[in-house]
Image (cartoon, rainbow, N blue to C red; front, side, top):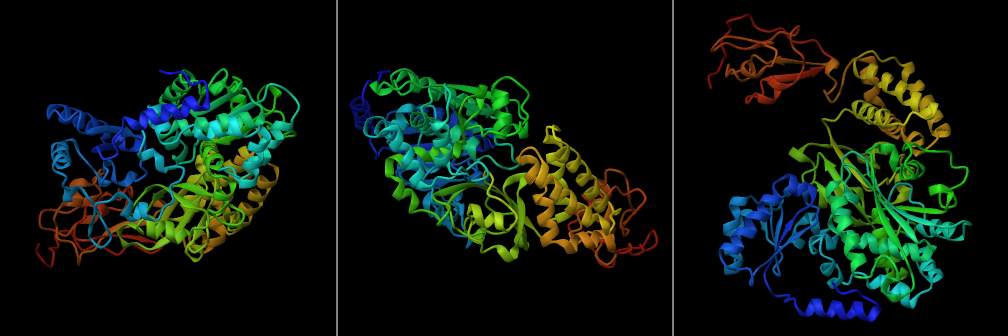
Length: 634
């Protein structure tokens, strides 16, 4: 591998790489992120390698294993370039036909995405999921092999670093980030430039820069997918930040559950060092910078800045009091600048295109784009990158394809377990840092969970409080005891033991936690409870006063019975009941023994005639006598 000793060397290498590549040569890309790999993408890639080799097409067709494309709902994904034909839910048995179609320059209709009007869409960019996105940070994931530094360099990679090192002083780089008004994508949206400036001006050496890839929110995987699919962009952003701040050493903190991210970033670091883009005398500029990867132990609370730094120092990952910000006193008491993966990945784009370009995207106080993990009761789930200011409605309905099964939208939860739920009346809210906070939620790292009419909001609040209760480090009383009591109260309400005075107690505990908890886990932990109580108070009251769960979710408040008018005596419920609670002989109307029923819902799910009913807050209708025959035969 050639060591690059100057900016000219980098540009010369880029030209050499591009000169060897034919943009019109057929190229098959396979999404090889964790989600698609779990769906069988690795087997598809192996089958493609074997089929291309078997047909002797190695010189004619290029195969590339890329990072996550984002459309996880339809994986494994295969895209054929230069036509940009996108095939969804590909299986190894589809491979021979795909290779043959590439050779014949034709499209396999049955593997295409089926649009809302039942039309088949061939081009990836025309699929609604992609069409309404603006993928400036995440888009390169589907083009490059994350283990190939040459792929990244060919796409313009490390050009921003060279520009910063040879055209800009550290102060100018810092001013450009401040001018861009880049806000941290990891949670609170604090201006990155102000944090950088604080660390730069703080007394003490050495200074540190850190990538936070802890990302513990349920359903969120934006940082993981960036780190897996394009680690060089994150690394380039980190090096630029180190240059601006005056750091010579950095850390990439990755949670233990992200083995592919760890693997790919370690490969990227090694390659960058070999090419002279990392380490001593980067590109002959005289700037030295070294990076180490630290694997986290998996604790959610370690995503908090001081807890993360404690973990890097080899201590228990629990937060400490912030009498002094970590930008002034962080790792080993030295100035330490921490940003999440997505924040660092924006930096090369800002330096390359300029702050004015970045500021042209987004809203007045929230610039650029944001990557969200769109999951839950929505048709098309996955990672979406959108400009700040897009509405929740457009994300859920234009990009996500609306609610599954034609159900009614109920709420969307943003910001992870510490975020809040937002009801239908606010669907047209522009998504930015400040508007979400005004609604009682937050941007967080970008989790977005869609809920439909079958979601119980009390149960949802209990779920997130339960998650945070397990993940709390227990160091401070307000968080430790507040979460325990909140979870106990919510459990009582869900199980029919709630009292009217519980609602006031919930609000008092939540306010105490917000005001007195040690870290952001505790200060924001009550958001799910407070927003569900604010927007769906009637559901809490129904649980307490009527012993009824309107969504028919809470087991203690529901019952199943078989409607004799609809029962066809098919026996499906009888055969599948795990506890033998269903009674009835052959060609007899079936009935459920309520004393035996565990309310698992199996009978409800397997009944093909909609005869099993789910009720809440009302008495179970009497069943007909044993031996009663159905009125109509199947």
